[in-house]
Figure 1 (cartoon, rainbow over the protein chains, first blue to last red):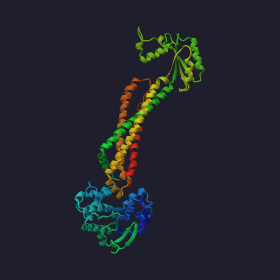
Figure 2 (figure 1 turned 60 degrees about the horizontal axis):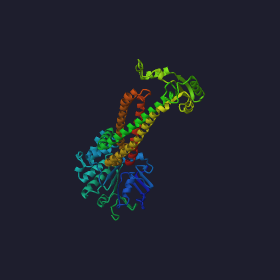
Figure 3 (figure 1 turned 45 degrees about the vertical axis):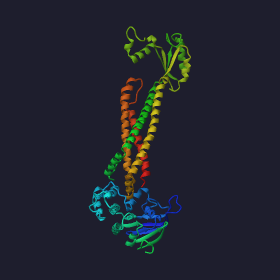
Figure 4 (figure 1 turned 30 degrees about the horizontal axis):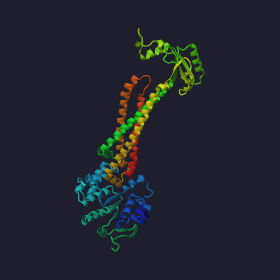
Length: 233
Length: 303
């Protein structure tokens, strides 16, 4: 058995009506417990790669394996089960504004059918882990951007997923707050969760010195084990 | 699966789109009532056919003294009667026939209108006013033209009455009501389906954030769609219940207490036919609301 959690084999993705493919023969292997930055300009194919991992779309060529499953062959009804193994964090947090912090985190467990007892136990633990101890009853609009992103991370991580996908998680945050969020993601990574993060944030990438995969026009142009944002770094 | 969650979603979903749900309930209510009425009409028409088929007879009235028909010079003679009998016996459409005397005809009339009207010194009718007649039972209720035309021209025959002719207007009314109510029901059903579709679209839009997150964290399609399906079922059940109640009231106050009481020559639809109509709307109502819901939730809530 390979330890690859995510594996792209010559993956291409062309959207209908566009001349150039969004991804062009991309091959990537990501092992369990890795922390990987996906960098590149807008339109380089980062978001498409993340969408393929989540099986929000299918590749038009090659194979995508996630958590040991060939996503091109995965039946539609099995997709929810795949997604339970993947936590997702976005730039815009995507919290439910009419639910409290605790309810937002609990929601992710409720809708996959976890028991109330388990939710009651796990949610406070996760809030504590992300540094929101005692803020469970607040509403999202009462929190700062950084705190809201912590809620989103708590929601993504509360089910202890195998993979955490983060799409520009620091895009809306100032550098100090971003550093805090990165610390948190690093901490989650140390629990064994594979983290795949798409970003534009030069500081963040340069500071952490993790694996960096750079995409350009849908192709992998760089894959450094301990890279910086720029090629020369 | 957390039923508490599904039910709380159902409750808030029903509340959020209350006016739309009421519109769906009302259109379903009216269309299901009309559909049920059509089913009842059809059954009434079947009952009438069955009932009249048993006694589909052609009656040949013979001339009597003072007959209103100018072709009748006087009361039919024995010779004329013999001709009619020969014609009936020689005709392949005739299964059997019976002769009804003036007295027998008079007894029938007395039975129908109450004997007291014909007693006493100055009765409205006497046996002498009644015509003699032959009652012909046909082999096939639909084959009656041959014997009719054969007997028609014979001397001593005043009038030929065919039950079919008498009841034609009733059949026509029943058919018109049946097709009319079905036609209107179809239009209303289309309106109901469109309303259901719009309701789902609105609800899916109102809950798009929740739905996006549910998909993201791996909620199953069924779990996401269940509140929508339950909303459809609840509105369908209310609509069908209202229609069933209205049809029940129609059966009780309209048929049982009025028509069946005053028009007794024919059997009328009853509990059994009402049950059939109920079953039809109880299946069609929910099915027709669930179908667009299933199709649209697949479209809007695709995982």
